Amino acid sequence: MMSDDIPVVVGRVYGIRAVGSTEYRYIGMTESTALRRFARHRANARAGRRTPFYDWLRKHDHEAVVDELELVLTTREDLGAAEIRWIAERRASGDRLLNLTDGGLGPTGVVWSDEQREAARVRSTGRKGMSRPGALNPFYGASHSAEQRARWSRDRAGSNTGEANPNFGKFGPEHPSYGHHMSAEARQALSGARRGELNPNYGRSASAETRAKMSAARVGRPKPSSRRSAHTRHHTNKGVWNPQCRFCDSTVERQFALLVLQGDEKA
Image (cartoon, rainbow, N blue to C red; front, side, top):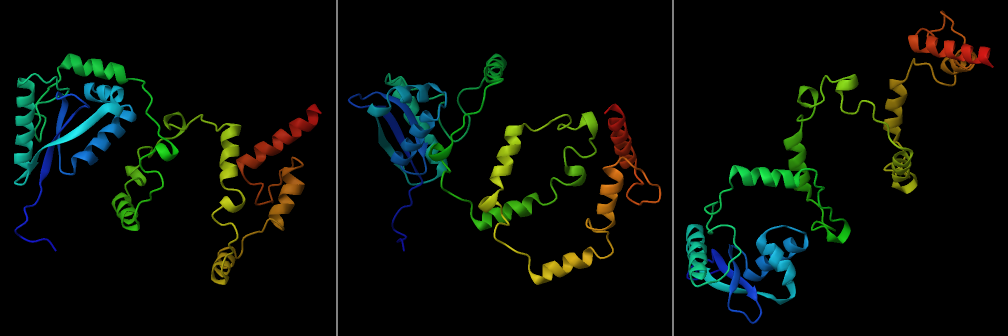
């Protein structure tokens, strides 16, 4: 247990420079440690983030070092003020800092003009997202806790059903999936992903209670081995439509029987 006499560390102001140089190229603040924040900067640079500082860090990654400039023990506001002070002092002394802002807790530095925003929009239009598969993904090997999954399930319950669904009431050409057909490769991939031991029901069997419920729900329904099967063999496959058959009494069955007859006539 920590003593009340020991001051609590709020954060640190750090500077990043090249080995052998006293000129800082970036000054920042962190509520963690300078080394941990520096490691995050290097990961962002390797991931391809585009800023003047990250462009410099990619080029000088192996020779860049981090220094802890100030330890703040009071408040986060003082931490932000300390960063602003350090940036101003180092710029005044001639350091070519690559910071985009003057520091602090908020966007107190650069404000983009409308032309800059439009130029950034044009540059990013059509740009593919960066994929980091496997071990390159920062979440590789990790998993969300049961509490987090339960929280997501609770927060999202009913958010995509009924009128809340963005495709609610859309049919035909209005539906985004209209006219879409899966390729043979995609179908094969889905089939392989659920085959054998990959199937969630592989090696499992329904309990006696479940089988009893399934049996009760199907009582009175024609089974495929009885009248439904006879309809398929003697009506559907032969192109016969019988108005006395309950399975023939549908527009789809009539159209299918007509197609079968037309096929026999062409043959």
